[in-house]
Image 1 (cartoon, one colour):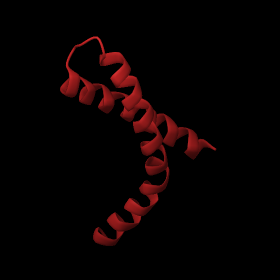
Image 2: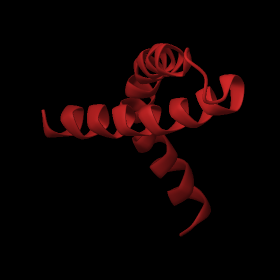
Image 3: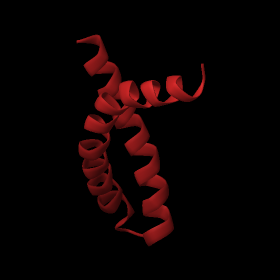
Image 4: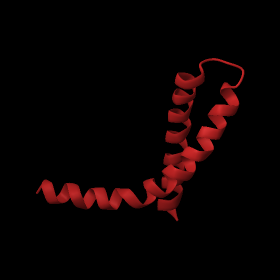
Length: 68
């Protein structure tokens, strides 16, 4: 359960930061910024959560193979 919570929080915070920056890049400080950002944050979290849960063990295995 702890691993799921950590993955979810990590994904949510990363998606929040990245989607905010990308919303500013794409629409600037306009009246639609908040709605564009929240939509991007929601989509980003849905993509980032499974990745942040399943990828770290695989990446660790790959790194361990190269660094012995």
